[in-house]
Image (cartoon, rainbow, N blue to C red; front, side, top):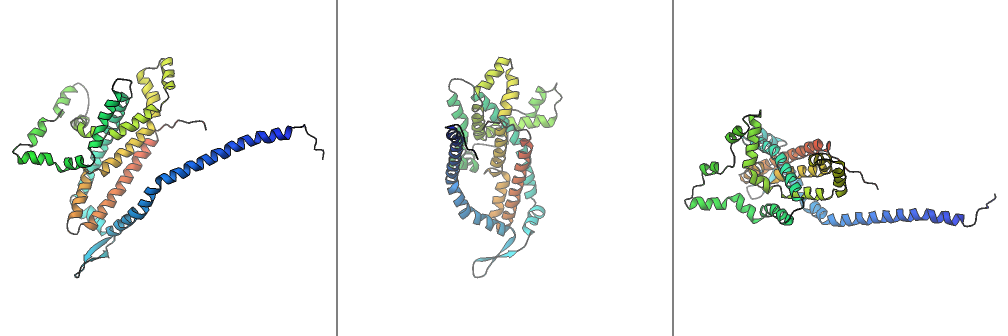
Length: 331
């Protein structure tokens, strides 16, 4: 074969092919280093979960299918009863199902209020104004106060008990007088509008419960702020040049760009509401656990509650995922 070629051509071709190869290898090695760093970051959690939480979860499942039999000489044994504890929780216990139903109903009404309020406040706090950092800190203070000792004091109603023991009346009249709005006020306000009583009652309940809504919106607000700040200002400049109004810009640009954050905040709100210490279902399960022989029954209630949480999260994620917009980035 005649292997005549232009001098220097094979060298140039080899050099041209080696550049992409080196870049690809460098990119692969960088991805591997990032992956190793990620595993090192989550390694403590994985170890604690496997060594501590997995045995606890296994024991909890085992308790839910058994009954505890106390020995005469001390100690106890587990007696297999199958789904008897689950049946007792659903059909024998008179309070579990109503408490569970009311908790789900409250959650359905709380999620939209918390997500909408946190989005509204995040948009306001994202505007350029003096003292913006101070206002952000003020709205996040309830998240800090709702943890640790402050939460325990609030849940135990220590201040209320002290005031009542001192002769100060904290009865229903004071609570009724402290309500911001009432259904009658809204009916007068919307007398000329064809709004159902259910909607009026819902708005009244949200406004009167604004303290709880603000307390539970701090984390969601930060997530929305991070999403809003990740939107390129060039997009808003293009909208202004094209003559788009603020309303059109919000629904055509801002809302689609932060729709992934709406999904994240909705799922977070569901989990936070279901696992809150003030949750009525959690409180009732704790009461059942402290009763004599209530360990196995409370374990069955807990696992039914857990499966219900997973079901609600799946439904919320499935509904919101259909409306989520993900921006495509060139690799």
